[in-house]
Image 1 (cartoon, rainbow, N blue to C red):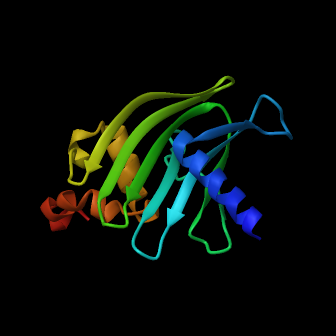
Image 2 (image 1 turned 180 degrees about the vertical axis):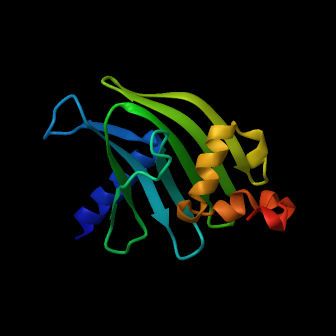
Length: 166
């Protein structure tokens, strides 16, 4: 049991360092890819997660969350075809410091390419929703209930929003 726990800790450490791993899908080699992102949810408030959204459907991409027995650590895996995706990444330290970024990634046969990235939160809000491109803002707002810590990342935007706007 100690060996297994050690291997899991090592794998999670490597996944965190790499941020994202890409694997060929064995069922359809060279076509669909599996992207994996580190996941963490501690009892002390720490949290890491990455959600991918489709530009085509403007919806959250279905994923598989694989966690350790405790449920505190793991990976979120996406099985994707080549295309353009919106990446929403959020991280909160055990001390409560919040970090978030939004990126456009393009998945092709060779792997992924980050086309553009915006750091929206680094202990304080750096960018508001209005400062993001229109398409990205619309996708994020329409999926806000499925994006972790969205209310915290864009808290000032919600305070300034006109109540009649919905």
